[in-house]
Every structure is written in structure tokens, then in C-alpha cells.
Length: 386
Image (cartoon, rainbow, N blue to C red; front, side, top):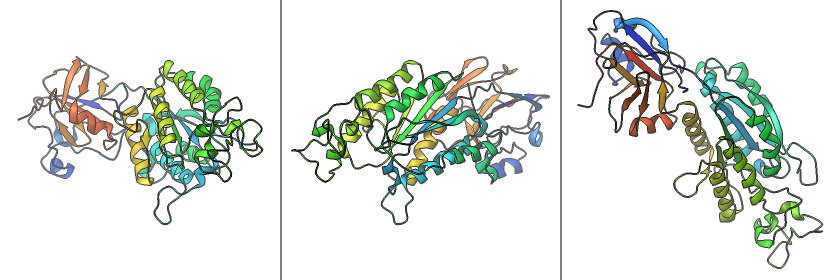
């Protein structure tokens, strides 16, 4: 399983120090304990840090997942995200948030990206395609280091387009499927869009499922179906293409590739939200409450949703170590510099002699996106709830 960083410090002599407290890294250092590097996701505790119990580091097994982004860059993505004055466009906010996530996750993931549509057509309905070939993230977190790494910079450049055209979601996913399904290892797709899918010339719908009608376009109303065959301005390509899109998403799910659906604000109201719910359900990542997709209202919300998804993918609550510790009763787990008690309800427990699982509050904290690294220290008595 993949974790940001984990280490075992094998005890070279009988330990005389308790594990560092969770009251703060500076306090731990002052007390002769272990100073954790909460800012460095790949930085296990230094060997024999402050004389704590040992001098041998054994890394965890690393199996970075593939995190593949599919970004809607249709014309409506040029609208502002949120109602605040000076709010960036949805497309600018998405590019920035995706780049920030790639920088923060670093080498914990392999990252790839596609956009849609690519270009052309009266409605810009050509299917999208890959703009960033999947590769390993930067070895160090560029966001934390103060300068973006080469991979993160290249990723940001690949999204250097402007919003334009329609939303050919189904056609794009069909084009991308062989590439994404052919990636080795665990793969996850993050689909970010602000509107209902369309651009299917074979679609047929009434006014109630016609995007121009739903968006209250001039001349489109209950008596005028602007998606009718032969309509000079819109036609069938403006039908909300729900069935073909959910079918395309379900193909990824069938191949054990979950699809996370992020919905940015749009003008379609409840109808579009219901479509996004169906997409999330088809992708196998539906939330437990309505809306079932991941809704975003502003820049902060977008960053939080992406961080949560990234943490869930890159830092699973099941952790496998590279070697079995010499004494299972002298192992302690930390989330950044916070000690996690050995507890089946809100802490951690062994699942095999060389793997453990985080439970309850500990797992929830890991998946929230707030934790940068998991660290494991062997040599001091395992701490249990008082």
C-alpha cells in the first residue's frame, strides 16, 4: 500500500526514552524525543534522532497510485467561481487547485491529465484528449519547498488553455478509456465539470432535457424544444447526454477504476445536480448523503475537495511495512507529529505482522487531507489509551 512516508527505527539497545508526545515538535525535541518533519512527506525520522531507541531505518512498501484528471474546459468554465468580487474563473481556479494538489502529493502519486473539448465544431464538440502523459510526481513536494518541481510545472503548462466549446463528456471518456485502463497499478479518475454533458449528435430529448431550455436561452421554452432535429441554433447536440455519459463512466468502474465527480456551480440547477449524482453513482465514488457527487461553491471548497480526494487515494488507512518489526509490542504510529494510540476504535491495530490499519478518527484524519506523512517508530513500548 502507498503511504507518504513510513519508517521503522530498530532498537539498538534497551530504550530509555518514551515516544515523543503529540504536544508539539519543539517540546518533543526539548525532551530528548523524536523531532518529526511534518512538512516533508518523504522524510522519515532521522536515524537515532535525539537518541530515541535506534539507528536503523526500514522504509514502507511504496506503490504509488495513478491519479488521472479529466478537466472540463467548456465555455461556461470562463465564468467566475463564487460570488465574491474578483473571484477567479472556474477554469483558472481549477487549474490552480489541480497544480497545487500535484505539487503537494509529489512522488506519492503518478499523475496524468486530459481536457475536453480539444477544439473545433460550431459548439466545440470534438472529444477531448490527453494533455499530460501519466508520470511520477516530483520527488519532493514543490509546494512545501517554495518552488514547484519540474513535473508540477509541466503539469500546469499542459492546462494552459482557455475555456471554449461544449461538454463532450461521454465521447472524451470513450477516447481516454484505453489509455487510462492500460496504466499499471491502482488508478483513479477525477472528473471536474461545471455542467451537464452534451455534444452527442445521436441524442434525442424533449425540452425538459434540453440544455438551452434548462439554461433559459432566448427563444427556448416550454413550447420550443431547441434540441429538436433541425433546430438552426442548437439541435440534438445540446441534449443533456446523461445515459451515454453514465455508461462511459461505468466502464471505468467495471475495470476497477473509480471515478470521482466534482461539480462546479452551473446554471442548470437541480436537473444538472441529478445528472452529476448519477455520474457519481456510476463511478463508484458516490458520497453517503445528497448531493452524491462532490459539490464545489468557491475556491476554498474546490481546494478542500481535491485535498480530501488526494489524501484518500495517496494515503490509504491500510499500511504495509517493508519488514516485520522485531517486537510488535514496541511500535508506535504517528500522523505527522501526533501520536496515535493502539486502539481498534479511533487508533490503529495490527492486521498482519508487517501491516496495520488506522481506524475511526485516525483514519478520518488521514483521509481529510490534513496529514502529510505516516511515521512508524519501533523500539519504545506501544502507547495505548489511558
